[in-house]
Structures are given as structure tokens and as C-alpha cells.
Length: 233
Ligand code: C5P
Image (cartoon, rainbow, N blue to C red; front, side, top):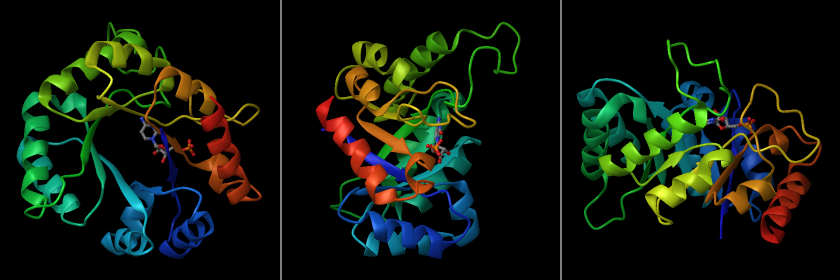
């Protein structure tokens, strides 16, 4: 069964933990991204873990191998359940990340999932600032196949690409999908969007949803509606 991950894109820990508290019993995964982590640091991760949530630390590392190895090691030592890097950093960076993951995992504990970002779901054809850019679907699939070869556990991709990725990389290779918009919702800055039901039918394992839940009049009702849509798909 696919999981709902709520993106806690808030400027302070109080707002994030209040939101998480409202969603306790509905969603079991929370995502801490750049905004919240830059403001509050590891304490917000500890707060969420203390509330019993699984935590995806979404810092999308992209740097030289030695730096990414250390960043992943430090992230994993916080006790998070999922971390990520950009696949565009290449084989040596990805392998260093996997090494950092092992180094940061306490002996006997299960290492967290390490995913690779393919192409941001806010980007579409023409947005990649390079000459002769491939079509998004083609580039995402190529990067996913590379991520699998590098030993990552899965990728961050749009629902639009999940089916092809599963076909090429195998059913156990994780597809985590942001850019989820229930029918009728404003897509905001996102571009390669799908509904929760489409993401499930296309094979996504984790659906990351931010504003459609956290910006709703009742986040609890919005999250439950998404979970119901996921289940009935
Ligand atoms: O509010 P919304 O549902 O658009 O939030 C999506 C979340 O997923 C954001 O926190 C964003 O940083 C994250 N994300 C994304 N696209 C990626 C990777 C992560 O939108 N490729």
C-alpha cells in the first residue's frame, strides 16, 4: 500500500509540529524540507520522531562526493527514515552518499531509504537551462536507471514517469511522487502534476503532498480525502 507523506513547508517548528499533531493518526510520514530545516535544524526532526512519525528529510544534496557523504552521514544520525540526493551529481557522489548512509546508521539498525531526485516536478519541457535538453520523460527515465545502477533505493519523480521507471528498474525500486494535486486544486509552481488516484494507478509508492493538505481549511479532512482516493484507486 502506498504511503502519504505530508510536506511540512513551514517557517518555524511550532507551526510544523502543530500541523503534524493535527494529522496524527491520519498520515504516518512527515517531510522536513529546506525551509523548515534551515530555520529549526535537527530539533524539529527530533520533535516529529518523538510524536511517532516517520520522517523524510528532503534536503536534496548535490555537492562533491566527500561533502555529500558527510551530509548524509549527519542526516542519517538524526534518526530519519528517508533522505535524498540529486542523481545529476553522478556515480561517485551517489556511492559516497550510500557510504555516508551506512556510516550514520547505528549498528544493528535498519538504514534509511536513500532516494535520487530525477528532475524537479516544478520543471517541464524547456525549463532545463542547458542546450539540447532531452524531453523530461526521457531524462527522468535515464536518471532513474542510473540511480538503480548506483545502488540507490529509488527516485523522486512525477507520477507521469513512475510506470516506465518501474518497468525498467523493477517493482521494488521506489518511486516517490511530489506534484500531487487533487482534481480542481491550483497547481501553483508545480508543472508535472497528477492526482492522487493517477499516482497510485501509475505505480508511485509514496505521494508527497504539501499545500493541498497544509493550506486546506481542514488539513485533517483534506488528508483523509486524499487517503480515500488513494485507497479506492
Ligand atoms: O505544496 P506541494 O504539494 O507542491 O509540495 C511539494 C513538496 O515536495 C515540496 O516540499 C517540495 O519541496 C517537494 N518536492 C517537489 N519536487 C521534487 C522534490 C521535492 O515538489 N522533485
